[in-house]
Length: 113
Length: 114
Image (cartoon, rainbow over all chains, first blue to last red; front, side, top):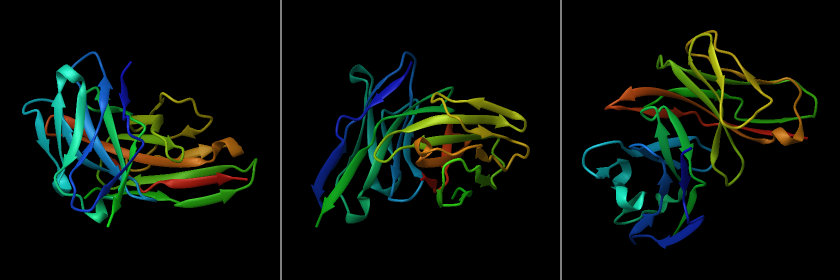
């Protein structure tokens, strides 16, 4: 069975600083990988996804993620964080072309002014 | 922009009451899902549907039931609410695009059972 681990429960960064959120997955086949963001009291919004091709994928809001098969990782990055990026971030691995998702526990990002 | 709606957004109800959480989408997506999310925790799939008259249980066992009579509508029902059902319930639908499925989420219903 597939699983996703997000090692950092909370991360605090200063506004303007760079950000990296870690995600490790376990899945036997080629994974479909996703990053979602959830603002307080809201549903999830898709930031980006990977399933083949270039291992560095660009998403919305200036985010990018890099797939590293050798490390079973799919870390999310942003070069300069804005206060509006404060939210909960979820990594997910999908089976059946991404039809069925298994989510990690989430990382709560706080941004200091 | 995805159009998926959930009502009510917040619900406080007493033990033993029957409740139905509504979920509707206007995108014509065949696949729909219900997730349960406890505060600060990951999402767990409790039900999904691949189309009209198709419903399946997800990874997390749930006492709730679902129905799919119309493509756009996927309600979740609890026959007798209990405090252990207190949680956030998220509805989603998906479409295949650019080689993989993408799930679109509603805003969620936060349920409190007293």
